[in-house]
Amino acid sequence: FDKLMEDIEILDELIAPLDMDRVIAGDQSPLFFGSAMTNFGVQLFLDKFCNMGVKPLGRLAKVVEEGKGKKGAQSKLDQDDEPNDLVNPDFGEFTGFVFKTQANLDPKHRDRLAYIRIVSGAFQKGMKVGHSRSKPGKKFNLAQAQTLFGSDRESVEVAYPGDVIGINNPGDFAIGDTLYTGNQKVAFPGIPSFSPEIFAYIRNPNPSSYKSFTKGIDQLLAEGAVQALRQRNDDGGGPLILAAVGQLQFEVVQARLKGEYNVDSDLEPIGYTLARWAEGGWDAVDKADADGKLFGIMIVQDRWGRPVLLFRNDWKATGVAEEEKYLELKPWSKPPMFE
Image 1 (tube, rainbow, N blue to C red):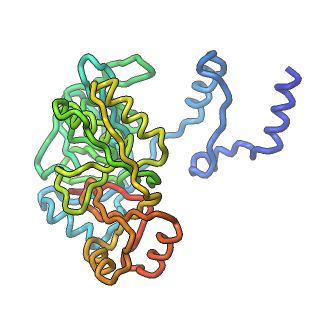
Image 2: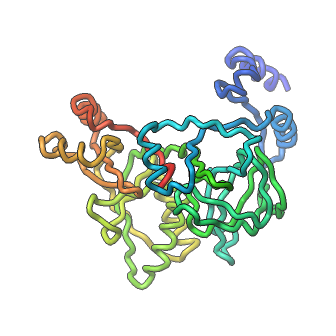
Image 3: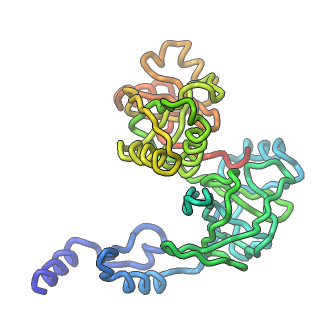
């Protein structure tokens, strides 16, 4: 007990007091102590967390008339790249965004779920929704939804802003996507991808397990376990490059491929340590390459076909970013709001 009280005194001196205004503004995060293994402090945490919750807030989004189609949506995005339409919880239509996907929650059924946070309107079982990256007019039937807590699942008939629901993922929903109802196409800003620091080719050593290997890789990439890169002109037939922050992510991918899909995999590390997305586009990359500014730099593309430059060290990346500003190098990327 004396040791506990001493630790509390140290924390009181070192950590700033809890300020709920700063928490709500996103400037401070509450810190809880406990142990899930021994069930110490878990219920206290859940009770306090529920009491600290605030009402759902609106989110900035891009809203375009769906009747304009892809070209109409893209023309508006070109005029103003930043989302500036505020979608409040009382917005007349249902909207929500995917913040997580997960496969094989039940290995016997190979199920896939997309987790949706509802921003506005109300979810009702069986409703039809549009998808921000699908063709105008295409609708998806949300026949089933569920809430999950640990290993427990519960079916959901109705859900409201602030709720999180899990829906069956047919393979079209990815992290950062927006689902909506109504005649206006809505897209919330995509969730940024982590900035990778290690890279490796991944190969299937057993050609007979090609289908299982491909399915496993596709589902793990959809979950965001790692990122995928390819050579510039590779349309999918060449070797896949995995990009991650740490070695553990590679080990998790290999372990899940073996455990969930029963396939082996080989990794071949690549000697690069930084990735930068060239928001200036392929024309800017071609110009820099023609001028000899990208010597020793690997030019690849991400899953959206956008240019990515791989550097061996931070010194080289900083130099290129400062000297070739038209490349508009960024250490992270967001998925396109519309496709």
